[in-house]
Image (tube, rainbow, N blue to C red; front, side, top):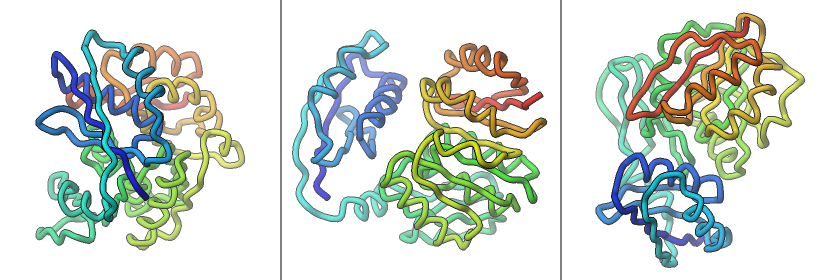
Length: 279
């Protein structure tokens, strides 16, 4: 597959602005992002590149910044492999968990070792939102609990839940490339009882869950929260991330309307993972 590299510059530059920009670009087909010296480098398949859609994101951007962008077609090579080798570094969470690709063999004694070959799918653990939920999972008792991972990306959350004894585990992503990558990673980790499905909230309804993870973005969370609540068992736990601390009041308001009790949140660089219990 051939890719376009699009370089975005934000003036004034801020990490918050580039984080929001990356989240919005992901919704129109961009698959990976790098914080470069000159700005945000974003990558999209050539077939999905639409400058009018990009301009609309720029024109409707919620912060007072000036955004410019320029695109170039990248030479053909295995960019997934290049990205894994050069940019995906092993992640450790204390002495409990290590996430690494097949290119790396980190030393150390970890209770959970997760092998992720990300193929540019979101959810390696590097982003704050994924890391926040990983930490929640490590603190949870999941043995024999049915778990749902919405917007699973690489499948890393579902895989860790399965390693902690959750079963059955269902992982869902609307993007085909993320679905395919999650299937591969489930096989790599020998977590065969993780079922990966391709689609969105329309797939929900036949089964119920004691624990649900939803790491997507604020607008989709607000839209699909009734669907998550409907399949969450009474006393079940819902952990949502993919939004900022400033968005938490709106998330809590919607959750309260649906009978979800807010218990706590974790925060990292203004990103939040919030936990709710179904009353």
